[in-house]
Image (cartoon, rainbow, N blue to C red; front, side, top):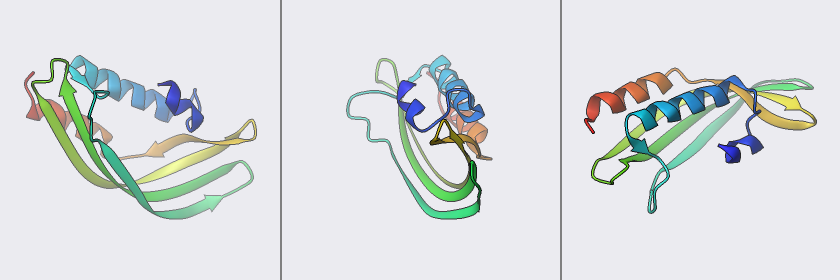
Length: 119
């Protein structure tokens, strides 16, 4: 999780949701970090909604291609999705960091993985 700290505030709601979702996938038996994992993403169509001295709001379109594998490598789930997200960014200690986002699909993605797999 430490690698997220460069772009996410450690107390942010988005980091708490990411941690919760990764823990949920782990409970399902999935591992995200494996050798030869070809997960990737593309973020495009950045639009500035608002920008002030210490806050900014942007929207993006995103495409995600995630590969999740169970611990023994016998069950792999490939999850592809595209969506629009809105990010709330704050200037904290003179550094811009993502504070929160609106992603209406995050819970649906986790549920989809649960439904499609039996580990």
